[in-house]
Image 1 (cartoon, rainbow, N blue to C red):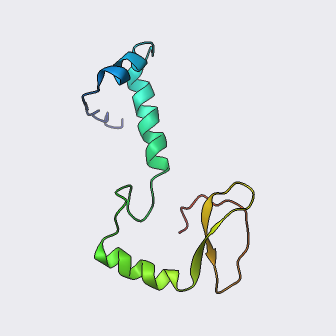
Image 2 (image 1 turned 180 degrees about the vertical axis):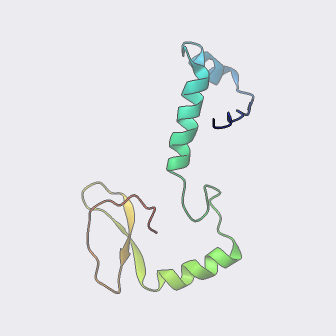
Image 3 (image 1 turned 90 degrees about the vertical axis):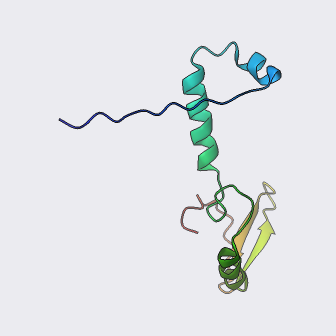
Length: 99
């Protein structure tokens, strides 16, 4: 029989407007878990959401950027990476996990 996984308890403070907005949510714990998982799914794979690259990451990024450019999609206006070396103009969205 597999061992039961221990669940951790996380608490945090909220300001009054956020508390008021959350009052009507029946299962706040599940709502917060879902919101956190959703946010983590959208985190930058390089900086992990910090917004800052380490010096080593910056060095790798400079090498990568020599053959890649940021372009804005004409349809949805999302900024995305394009491989300049291959002339990659594929506008299909990617999940970003292969970057």
